[in-house]
Image 1 (cartoon, one colour):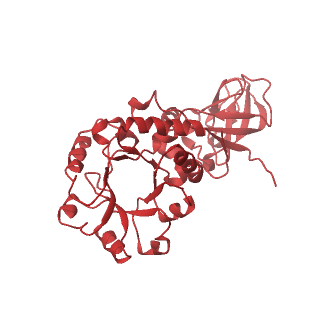
Image 2: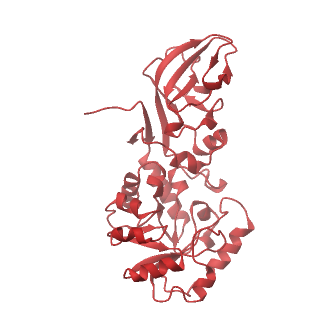
Image 3: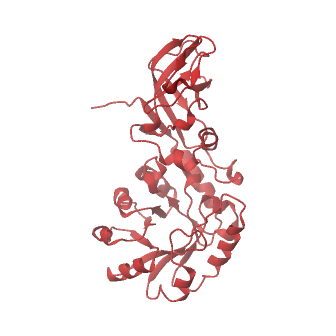
Length: 346
């Protein structure tokens, strides 16, 4: 049965591919991969991967083996599982073209006990999150491993922070000390730090999807996703009356208010309350008023006398602008997009 949801994401596949190609050019001689974890940053991992692999991407990154299984066949590309391998992952080990990114000495031993084979390895160079230590590497913890990519992760690439240079130096010092065929350090923001950070493979995520982690990318990266929602009701709110939970907004004059099918259950967060903006069919700016609730948002549509129940309006701010308005990071805004949307690729 065909059915149309009352809210939707419009996802620009051409912009996604263009962003990857921009990041690939910026990566210079390094290959450019793609992080498609968290269901392709909320847009749909399978759909994202299909388009990027078609454009030439050959290295995909997910968080867990469950995400790798859901991704399925990715053709000529390979999939790296960033969280390594647990005992519980054993039933999925052997998925075609999927390998773990080993993060601990115990994971190295576990992988070897499972039969070994090609793997990636994460080394911690200063983030103190996942990864073997540099001392582990120097002490021979990776001896006997067949390593495709030795990688590390930048903690502060979106800032001009001294830790960037320290991590770069620590990682560069590992060149030639393992069996790894490739070295990889830079995420989206790391690519913008310059050629020294690219090594053999870059691993962009946020910027693929329209996020801007550093100002250098602002004029290069295209928006990829926009939210649209349907008006459920239009009403006149008289001067002095309030709208929504806790009466946080009061009409200073008679106001035309549309209630739209969207809320924090969809990933349109309460941080947009009384400060978000929507846009009408003619690109009119429409203020979000009152408290964002679980399923509903109120919008001032006084500037569009003709708009009525059933019409669609967009909440199409760029990710950086939406981040400033809501107080949420660009990552949270993307990955929090809920499952009630129709995801329409254009």
